[in-house]
Length: 452
Image 1 (cartoon, rainbow, N blue to C red):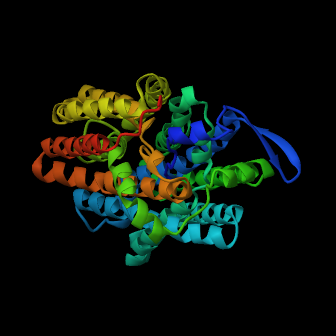
Image 2: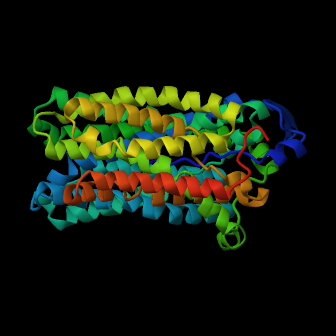
Image 3: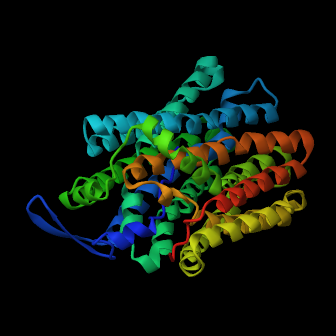
């Protein structure tokens, strides 16, 4: 699934020291003059992230409404869902390895070749799931195919880092860094809206039998088509002389991973933890309520939950945009701290809302999406401004990989397992721990203020 954000805030000293820190930059490359505006970079970032998140949510939704029945018919519904979520987490475990492998490929070949291979692997693994056999027809082999495809998706997601979010952050006007930082984050709710919309349409248009037989496969074909379009759009950007010159000038090139960890390991850890509240909430308002209601609510259809979540995703888009203006006024560190506190307060209402019938569940989903938008809008790569210039490209990628791994990878299986076995109050504790981790990491970091 795609997933994955590597956008980060630029170190304020870079802006002060660089002669190219304005909103639009003149570039002389390969004998020609070109003008690259942050808005142009933002287009590539949004296209790339939206396509990745569409893949991400197509799989996430299928992991609730399809895979438990298709691959684990021999288990009880809860256990089948937990097994499905366990395979879901494999992508996040594989992502850091994909980042390292493809960084090496970029050093040996080129940025364009790395991106081409990564997105082709991602598209092939995603489209291949459209042909996934059932357990009844292939036995354990079907489960193995899903697991291998999920690992391939994670490796490809790690390898699809193109440097454009970093370039966008480094070329944003000083007074609008929060605004430009949030642009790439719009890909998440956009991808969710499209994915949930396609699944909702198929579930409404088909009988349950037809949907489980073949209808669920259609979104995976759509994902492949979107990946192809996004691939050419991103290659068109990163392969131009102007962009290549900017990426090289800003030292946005891979570095040795061992050296990075040895010299900047603490920044990777703090950066991942600073966004922990947002990444934990990410799956608790998207995948978790869908699975919980699907398992335990006999009065509410899954498609109705998807429709509510689509509304929530639109609210999330508005909140993400709002986060840019708030961060430019208050500073990123203050914004993230306030939102982590808000998420901590929200965590206390999880049992009341989830068990409060359709109204309570809708409030949980909609309020959760709003909080997610405000926090996620500024969360990606929250402290990668701390990295030295030569480590920023690889450091941003690995920071995001670790944030997803620690904050989101196991959230569905842990939250559902805790809720089913010990009660919804333990989901509150889980989310509260994420907020506490973010506040602790932010207290250790002192260079996040966008207005510096």
